[in-house]
Image 1 (cartoon, rainbow, N blue to C red):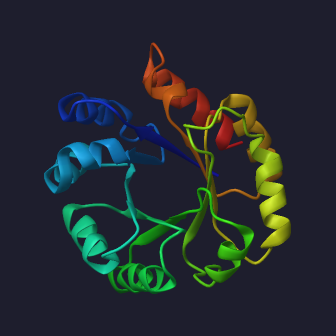
Image 2 (image 1 turned 60 degrees about the vertical axis):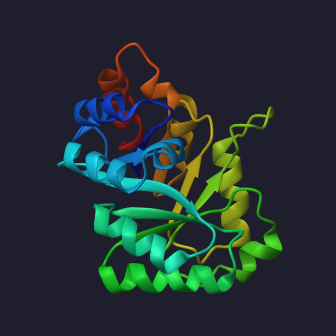
Length: 208
């Protein structure tokens, strides 16, 4: 299992400084959607410049204009880009084609998608399917139970990620379960007193 650390709601200066500290200390560094909206293409370039060892995921949350947004995102330096599962099948097919052409990776964000919609978009074998519990929701998620239920519905989907309030206990349960490729952690690391130490501790958990 890999660890993805999400950086969000900072100035670009602070975000790139934090990315430099975390570079190589985590498998994937995420440029969160707030940073994409605040700083755009040049912000992606700046994050790419700051990151030399970890992979860079840019959380575009594409829902239309898929091929264009993905070409621009990969051109700016992203290794992985996100598309919303709520997007049309045509958009998903378009971004998948771009990722296959460029040798990059797409992550499909399944936030608030129905099982019916998930069945419709289950035909992208190299994509990462991300179970995403919205930060705006007040209820909590049991990550291993969420993954188990999804895997029962879609046993043939090989690449899973999960995000949403995951702490060390939840990450340890996911690591023991061995069904998840990527665990995504944000404020538990980035808002800690020592983000590098927090990332290193979480890496020990997820790589067990």
